[in-house]
Image (cartoon, rainbow, N blue to C red; front, side, top):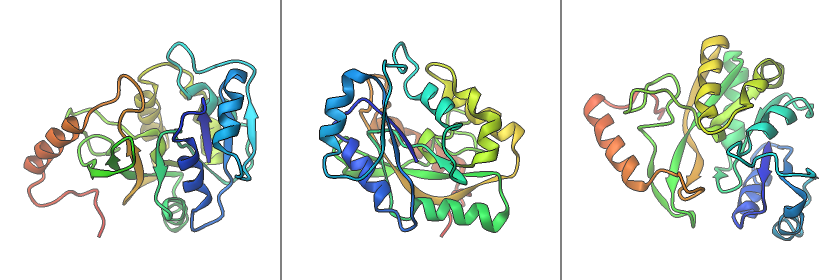
Length: 228
């Protein structure tokens, strides 16, 4: 699990959710700039996780954690690579659900669904309208949230360079993955806990409420991405 961070207050919650996974999960925290070293250290006090401190902030100017995702995919040795934003967290069985699906179906990668939560972590609603992968969102675009991926390392080594871009690169990466690595599927489980207010451009609760209402009209017999 790769977590790029500037030491935001929710970081500890994110890391603790990785350490609480039902299967052993290596957690690598990348501090994006030496100036954030102290807040990262304070947030993680008492937690046994490795931290790599970059000398400068490579996520500045709209790159977010994208360049870290591109680079560090080549620096880990685990069989599967996942990403987690510092302001989000995971359900305890997130990694197990993903890895088990990849193994059972011999997939190259998979993705999960997400719950929408307040900045404080309070559950608001499910995302049944945007991060749906192979099913178009209510806007008719395709998106997979960065936090939702689980990718075999040998596959990510072929695609990680695509992360090198600014705002919207997550959509580019999703298209590249779906078009070029076709052995994939959705877990059908809502195991990513996506918290609103992560940055100034974050969507609102109303966005998901309106989108979900639209999708209920589109899929009157039930959502095909949800598994019981």
